[in-house]
Amino acid sequence: MDASVLIVDDEESIRLSLAEALRDEGYTTCEAGSGEEAIKLVRQERPDIMLLDMRLPKASGIEVLKQARKVQDDIVVIIMTAFADIENAVKCMKHGAYDYVDKPFSLEAIKLVVRNALETLALKKELSIVRAREQAEFEADFIVGESPAMRKVCEYLKRVARSNSSTVLIQGESGTGKELAARATHYWSFRRDKLFVDFNCTAVPEALVESELFGFEKGAFTDAKQQKKGLFELADKGTLFLDEIGDMSYNLQAKLLRALQERSFTRVGGVSKVSVDIRIIASTNRDLQAAMADGKFREDLYYRLHVVPITLPPLRERGSDVLLLAKHFIDRFNVEFKKNVYKISPEAEQMIVDYHWPGNVRELRNTIERAILLEAEDVLLPEHLLFAEAHKVAKTIEPTVPMSTDMTLDDVEKEYIRRVVEAVGWNKNRAAKTLGIDRTTLYTKIRKYGLARA
Image (spheres, rainbow, N blue to C red):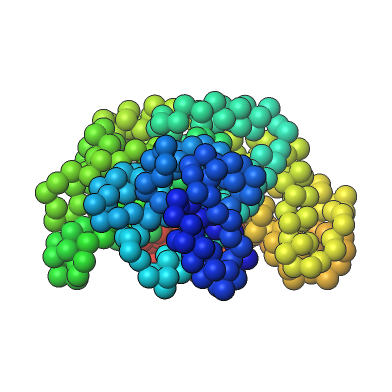
């Protein structure tokens, strides 16, 4: 492996034997007999790993470790220590050392710990690259658009991100980009180097939600063979995104509220508190105030989440952004599918501008993805746009739903979904496309409203 190791020890014989053994493994080595010389070599050589003796003339291993990490914060430090100094070696690990080995040690033990350290370093570098790519991807998707509404949203989220801990509630119709907004907030914040953990409140059976969020102890239930950390714990120092919070059961809302207030929780089957430092971002496409009035959402949880509320505008209110987004997705899928669609015909452009886009940005993305994937022309034409078929289906449905003051928003949604699925003969693919939602969301709503084929 092409890596460099700095060996720091005041005994020349130890330095020479370690250097020879590591060079035989393919590593580049350099040596220092004092702390001062070690820091100088860190500045000059930027080694990947430092083997550091705990006791050096005029300096302790802890002091050299601190100085080295100030110069090069990603250097991997392995402490070499006599048994009597293990307590100090543990202190070094608290200051960022990777591991320690006892003196006297075998050369094989040193080779193994160096090999493991380099694998850890490679994983960290790979993770850093992935996170940078993710950040660029999510920012690219989220920031597309020049409408005043989206400019305002971006500026607001950037200010919120800098606050580091404020709870954020993102509201908006399905497909407006709530998860993208949450990820952008995370990547714009000081927590960007930690995990962004997302949890869809509708995707997990109610009986499993508590253990998913808070984890469980070994023996907490029949299949709990060992302790498991929950998402709250995994997101420590990072961000936890609770998607579709409005669909969480009323009983679980109380436990979530307690965890949000205390920033601590107890694993299922446990007795001790686990404290975490996380930012909570929640999202919903439901009217939470109406849900409160119906007794389906806790008022205290609502106000706990409603610290920094933000509403994403639907695509139909974003003006010319729809064409900018369409061209953005064309460029993306040209690369992904190795196609060369270089323009949108004037007729197709007009259809894109005129269409209502009930599924918002998600529907637009899916429409463009299908067109680029399946069609061979280098110009996007009206017949390539799947929503044209969906629009024909929509025209066969009665334009108005009978309404009364006794009806809730859920009642209206239920009736409209019923009419759509019946109009397409319960073809769920066509129904989902007509409604502008994905199949999973459609199945969830069909179960929620108890709809069944006649």
